[in-house]
Amino acid sequence: MVQNGDDETDDIITEAIDVSSERFHKIEFLRSSEDAQEQYPEYKIEQVPAVLIFETDGAELKKLEFKTYDLEKAVAKLKEISN
Image (cartoon, rainbow, N blue to C red):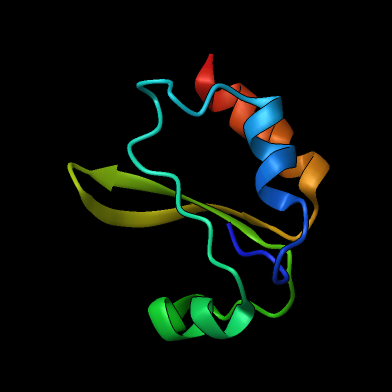
């Protein structure tokens, strides 16, 4: 998840879903689009907030499953995954 500085994205997500669920291997909050572009340049993050959900193979990212700039859609998808 990519935030715009100290916005409320992390609070919105963590209040909406159980981030300790075993369905989530890792949840990472990046504080800026610059941080995201540096760490994940291949995913072209065009605005913030952004939520990217990856399928993993152990600890490694395998493929991008879902990308959105809409927090309501992100919460819905994360709830779907956590069930």
